[in-house]
Image (cartoon, rainbow, N blue to C red; front, side, top):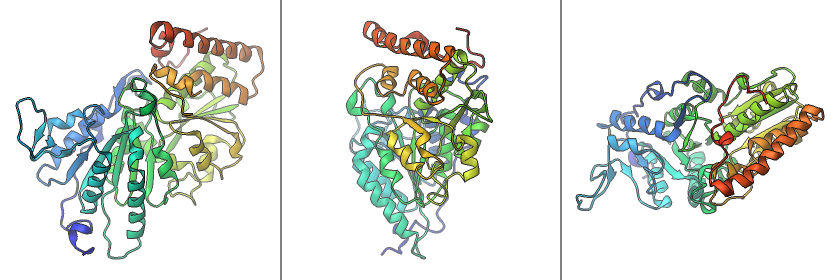
Length: 436
């Protein structure tokens, strides 16, 4: 029975998945961060045209637990509908019997549908609120085991990857509150078989396109992508995003002040951590210009462990070229800090990595207050960089005092105004920071 085509990757002559070119959806940027975009909204256009390209083959589906529009993927409804078998009424929207979107409020059902769909040789994506992905932890873990075991059986054919898009994530759930703030699904994957699992944290919309396009073309993997649905700066051009995605991690020279002998390395993995890290680098450049700072961005989480632990791991030379061998590293991470410590534990001098991430501090509050509560704000990162670099001069002391003052001002301002301070909410990257 297991060798039958429906249970073994589908028919050998089944049509391949046709995918659009990412360049058609790329966000053009005149300067770093000068344009903002909803990353998943941009990706929704890519998915819409994937449905159109495969209309005759009928081999692609989107599974989503009642969140397609909330997750800003509504453009797919320009090409297809939600599958719905019952009679329709006039007020129904985007429902039809041949709809390619499967949407019911059950994470377990949606994820299970996608598992079965990919095992039959067809393609799809499971899009979900990040906090509720942990509902399917054990299901994904068992699918990973199945893929690992199936890969050791000669007659088992390769199957399309299980692609998981987590959005509406912890750092941008300030309106829904603590119950919707949980980045723990990453923890489920990092312990699993390296031959099967992949995890991507694109820093902007163009990088989401690059990472997702790569995942959609892959087979025999479980691919995790985490991206925000909110408007956020676009840092890289499409060509740069493709290169960054292929490398897994890169030094962002345009944000760095010293590429050879930095006093401190600022690193980030995730869209909100990237924003706060760049803002911290900008503040340090403005107020402590003598401090030598290198900025590194990680999009492929599995570029961090050594290559003998994961095939995507950076070789020793590439890792040291970015993170150094003895320099302090202040690392802003999307999830729980222990994940980074686990991944880099065999890298040179791992105790020099000082990770800021989610600390289970949350509520209904402002976006910036979320990073403040979890000590991952630009001010916390800048203060930590000064401390780790051993900066003790007058400029450093003055800057540290200013950053502390800003944190105190933030606490007062959000209570009085119910919004973030303008100098935070309206901050933009400039190559030459304004004078103090």
